[in-house]
Image 1 (cartoon, rainbow, N blue to C red):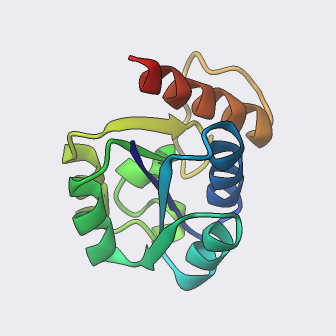
Image 2: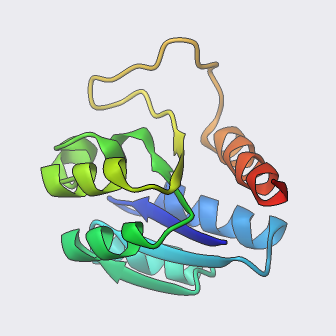
Length: 136
């Protein structure tokens, strides 16, 4: 399974996702795609198998992904303080990959029905979802 983790800003969420994926499913390929080099570096340091930065890598890598993970904002143009370009959001959204998105109640977007949880609790739930996908 090819798992793509997309994150921006400091890459904190992406780093947590990569660590949890590698601990839970050590043999799976994890590709880190950051909207900036700091986010990419954080995810690579956490154990991602490879990484790239920017708009074009999002387009290329998401075409071949089985799963795409990241904050909900990766499918919204101008989210993450403008780091998600309209092209990035479109490429992620139209990818055939299964998307597991973490609800982050920021960018003037709230997701009704989500529980108030810490980021680490959401990360654990997200990785459990892709672990179950692997079993299918």
